[in-house]
Amino acid sequence: MEDFEGFVRARSTALARTAYLLTGDRHQAEDLLQDTLARVAERWTAVSRGGDPEPYVRRMLYTRAIDGWRGRQRRAALDTTEARQRPELRGRPDDADTVTRRLVLRDALARLTQRQRAVLVLRFYEDLTEVQTAEALHCSPNTVKSQTRHALERLRQLAPELADLFGPGTPVEAR
Amino acid sequence: MTSDLRDAFDDLSADVAPYVVGDDLGRTAWRAGRRRRTRRLAATGGLALAAAAVLALIAPWPVIPQTLGPAGTDARATGYPQRITHQWWLSDLPDRPGPLAGLVEINGPDTFGWRALSQHGNQWRLPQGIGTGDWPALSSDGRRLGYLAAQEGPYVLRDLVEGTQLRIPSISGGTIGLPARYWVGDQTPTFWSPDGAHLLLSGGERTADGTPPAGLIVDLTGSVRSVPGDLGFPAGWAAADRPVWVKVSGADGRSEYKVTATTTDLTGTPVTTVTLRPSDAWPGGGGLNQWSGLASPTGDQLLLTGYLTGDRGEVRRFSLRDGTELGVTTVDDVWVPCGSSWAGEVAAMPLMLRSDDGGTASTALLRPDGPRQVVAADPDLSATCLVWASDALAGEAHGWPFGLSTAWWSWWWREILAGAAALAMLLWGWIRLGFWRVPVRSKAAPPA
Image (cartoon, rainbow over all chains, first blue to last red; front, side, top):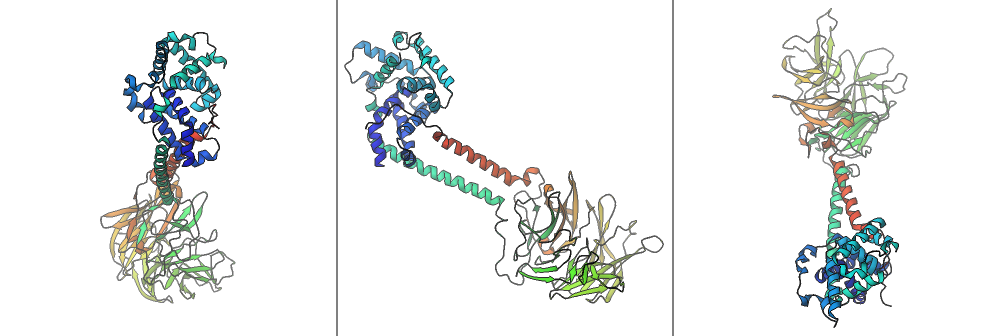
């Protein structure tokens, strides 16, 4: 148990950030992280015996985010949260433009499908290759490629003001 | 682009972590994991128990001999299996299986021979050599069994409750040239006396004087007595020391067709002889043979089965006191003789039900309201004859859960259940273990 708690203390912040990006909502991210860690705790002896447990934990995080978990629908109504519940608006004395871009990206990501969002997070935040992303999401590399393309096209439509992030001509397939 | 998007993701999630990571997350998750693990173990245990229960339905009897403990002398069969079904694992009949309910003859393309039947339908192989041809003898209480171990002998008498066995090497099959003093006939019925002390067989002594044999009487000490004389076919016992014989004469039309029943003592000396008098004329040809006669357990009646054309049997009851007919019943699906029996006061006829593969054995009780089938055999078993202990057939029918149903799935329900359980377990395992298939490498490494 001490090992597990030590692991959670050391890695929970990084895992929480991924969970948030995968869900787009801090409540759902909290549920996802708790659910994932409970499942990991269930098999902790076997997981920790194999060495570094983080790949397994992250894999489960991705899978749970895609396959759904209990709280997803329950928390859906919380998307329209008040500003005090939106940590992306707090904590840093950013200028208005930075905050606006952050909100636009957040809202655009929220309008992608679970799988499209997961593909973007795994490819561009977790920095996984197409093959690794396909293995994590139980799909083929071609699916990852097409999902990435569709997700970026959708983001361009939803947030043309963020064209510098994912504008036309971006060679995403080249990675 | 990619570093720009990554920076944007980084920026978006930078301040979220403290809100997502709850207080004491590690301890909370650990407790939740413990609860999940407990539930998983409980579910796994339940599934394993269910699978074990299903397997137990399929294979408990072959591996657990239904032996009795030390039995009293009054041990007897009290029930019979309503369903004779296929059995994947067969073992030889153990020394002390307890009273048997019956015997079944199998004549399939791949397997053949006699099997013993427990009261709940478990089957054991009768340890006989190939081609002995004799008819095993089961006493009315199911406790005593007699059979020819091999064509060369010996004849074996077994007490299935006490586990004792008597081997009589002086009895062999009927093959000419065998050295044994006595021979027992192929394809002939056998009869234990009501007290189980004597066994009446069709056969004789290999003598040079040519005296026609009537039968053999074997007792529990192993002594064998050949009964000579023109008495006809053995037909059971009128009392513990009174064998009954049935003789048919005048079948060629030149003399009067006559059927007589003779009761003798153990030496073959006639005590009484009665001429059987049907209420109407004997059917043409009679249709009588060595399987036809059977004395009742009370010894005052004789059952006489005529095998008619059209797969029908005509079963007449006669009084052994004066030969008068007491009743007649016609039964369908009687085209393979294998010996009738009794269920208390009710006669039981062996049937051969037509099927795609030829036929499958069954048994009908001749109740006052008409014949009623009481046993169903799996067509795939190729059962051709059923021999019952009278006490078993008069007792409780064990046919759970499908009784006399002959639907195909009712013969294979255990395999269907086991297959469904196996599929469920495979599916469960696939779902549960799917996470472990492909390891994923992450760029994010824990801090040193």
